Figure 1 (cartoon, rainbow, N blue to C red):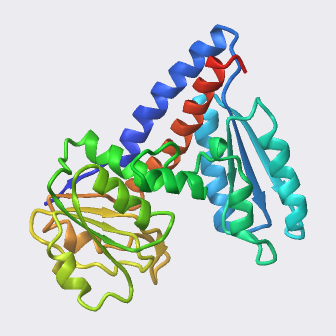
Figure 2 (figure 1 turned 90 degrees about the vertical axis):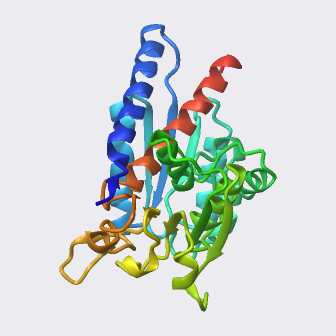
Length: 286
């Protein structure tokens, strides 16, 4: 039976440490870190994600601004809103919740956020720095996965890592972070012909393909580490990952649960990167 990689427990520990630091700032009369979350429209999943982020912000003690804009907000209006927050020295992090309404160019919006305040790590400049091996702001889900592996003393160096999924949010930055930790990385996706055979070679298997319970035990090498990034609803309405947890947990050495694995770490790394900006601002006297 697998050892459960408890992302929720690690996230709670990390958030508690951040909370203690923020409390010290408050006692010293220092400006608290500020995170702005911009939500356009009424997407139900986005609203859930924003509420989860709000809860983490309140727990840690940051100053939070949730700017909820109507579905009809134009691209120009949203760009103007972002520019206002870019120019505000009291704002440490800006997050534009995705997806955006179809009439707004997502790429243009991500480009508009000041790379320094891009605590989601999606700006092309930050992605480019990561590709060069000089990361500043890192996509939060891959960042959280690396921290989770480190917390369980799982060595990455020299390991064969297979990633299922090639998104800009998870797959691509995950591959680069694994390379930076001296792994040998194989990127796969929905069009990969011999997907199962490649997955079976993995010492560490990261699954982020967006298909409920797609990866079963026959994809997994005995003793592998399995990281499930998926968040789906099965036919019974139950929240499940991209991995069939029951069968794979009998074969893997370590596995992340859904929920309670990768998700809490994603939000925590968002908070960590906001805090990092807050520390920088303090040093600059802002």
